[in-house]
Length: 360
Image 1 (tube, rainbow, N blue to C red):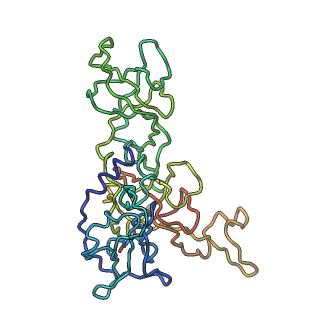
Image 2: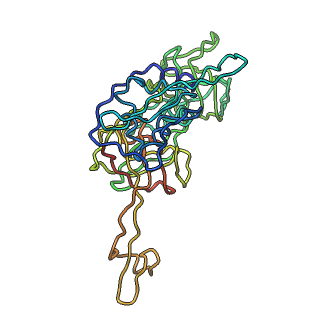
Image 3: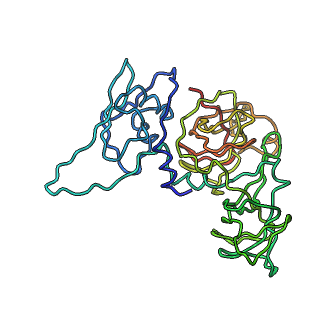
């Protein structure tokens, strides 16, 4: 879904926020005022003021001047005020005098998180649940027995499809396996392009096959690729109210969708927790970095990884406690896994970092 369409949905939302019991803690070097600039997000703005930017709904709450924080625009001045002993933000338009009147360029409202980073992930699937995998319809081929297909080609899909509906062409990628239980959680989907049922009167269909026009592509399609409906939630606005998650819910980052080994802020990751774990859009997680094991004897103290092969086989004498190195916000939820964005990162993360529910 295009960025401007997502933004259009975003502007129309009115949010009702449940009060959060925790007291907001301001940064020691917080500003008293802040001018909103193009490219800002509500999360980034709150990070200028709060130690815990995921509590941003509280910063804007109960403020008659900011009834809907999603209607804050570049050029506005935000001022820190106090209401009943807690910080709030008030706003006013920035008016600049100019000897020559000119038309102001219309600008979009400030989003919660970077729309450019999530727009592609809202308009297509990225994980195929195990229950759907066996019966997923496939690309079969064409009248010329062509093995590969490009934008503008016509191919046949397995089964029947709805006319006028947009479909996604996908290729199966890696298996997502739970690192602890070894359970199969789902299959990675690699997006290839879009298709729709062909309206060409010279091309027929049966109950077993349906012709498709390959209307857009990012790469070539092949026999055996999957043809799946574009998800209904593809048009969801990129607005996510942070949701508290109990600390008892723990898991792990199992993949980065850009296949990078080094994961940082704004990167998109897959975690091994989903709907069956009561995860929802907006769920927040802390990312933890495991501490090293230490071996201690009468003559030396060494990290277990630096010890002999024999020393690496046993349990360490002491384990350095894990440290929190960032936060994740979930924006897509499947049955057994979820897709999340890294909202903050103080250290380089990887696909083996542990996660823990962020309770607030």
